[in-house]
Image 1: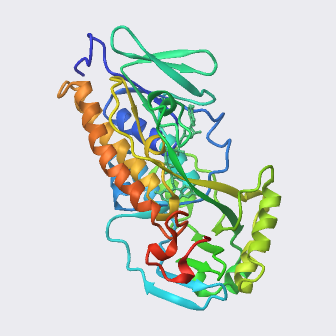
Image 2 (image 1 turned 180 degrees about the horizontal axis):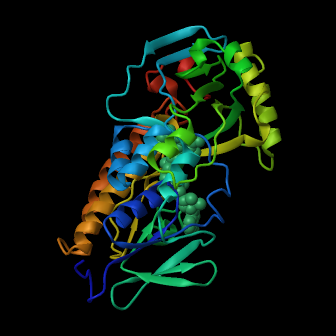
Image 3 (image 1 turned 90 degrees about the vertical axis):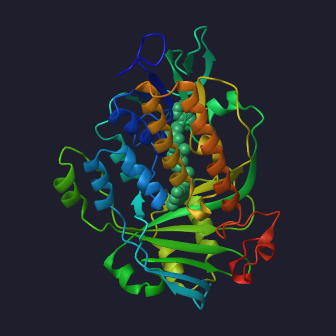
Length: 405
Ligand SMILES: Cc1cc2nc3c(=O)[nH]c(=O)nc-3n(C[C@H](O)[C@H](O)[C@H](O)COP(=O)(O)OP(=O)(O)OC[C@H]3O[C@@H](n4cnc5c(N)ncnc54)[C@H](O)[C@@H]3O)c2cc1C
């Protein structure tokens, strides 16, 4: 490989081993570019991250470009069954809008987040857990020194801040970058037993749904069961990979009135969810009642304000670290994977000597800021959590789809 700078090969430091950072690392590994990932969490399993992520065509294509073929096939084989119906209902499940969802033609598929992260970690060298990046310093020779909370440092040609919404890298690079608060939502998980499945109306199973009460509180549930049993998928595509077994479940989301309660544990949040759906159809109440209460968690929704170009020549940002957005449209991971694929390809060119590193970085940033913030803008008007300053009326949504005022 052609030296990138000063006679030594390109080395990329990635802060954050989430979906975007790991996908970039896979891309660089595939093209033989040296990369190290530093992840704050102590291990891949420190936090429960087992909810559904919908990959659209964009995200699936990016994943395919970055992963070796057998790992991409494993991701596809462990996909969650596709929704076949879109339905919006009132809190008694009276339909207000419904249409069939044709089979995806853009290559998109749903995945369990934990499973996808395990696949992204598979066969990847250079991932270090329990090491949070706390900033960086430019070196005299135009490189960058990343600094970690354990006092250690690492020098590379490029530092990529892929450290999520609360990014420490962004805090230093763009101290004035702001976020708009879009409220919060509750997430929960209910094991899918045969009894519960039999008792749940079809309209809530394998569907993209939203159940909205007159007061604006809302519930949506995704059926999470893989197309192929994990053991079969692993044996077929990547026998050396270990995937944590995932129990089939209903993964649900709830829009709740009032501020996010502070200091409330998962059981308290589950109790709040139970109170919120007390007047809903019995099928909704049952899904919440049979939930794994300990798996209930809140998600604070925020939307990044657009940022301009930055001058730092050896630092860039990727994914939620720069363009965090509401999960309402299901775009955040898709865009983070797109960032990883784009940056990975450009860095591969730079490492081969096909273009200077600085030009590769600037080209990435120009494209990423453009499509990334376009997605942020669109996510602000997603019905999942309408931005408070705008409101459902201004969005042209029917009243049953409006969020809390
Ligand atoms: C409940 C929920 C459902 C969602 N559903 C969808 C969906 O269906 N489709 C979709 O496209 N998007 C979805 N999203 C959004 C999606 O999860 C994010 O946009 C995506 O994970 C962003 O990837 P990322 O790599 O930028 O950040 P993350 O995946 O958040 O990864 C950041 C990583 O950096 C680590 N980190 C943080 N600080 C540091 C530090 N200082 N040093 C080192 N490491 C650090 C974190 O521990 C984390 O592992 C959803 C989000 C939520 C919360």
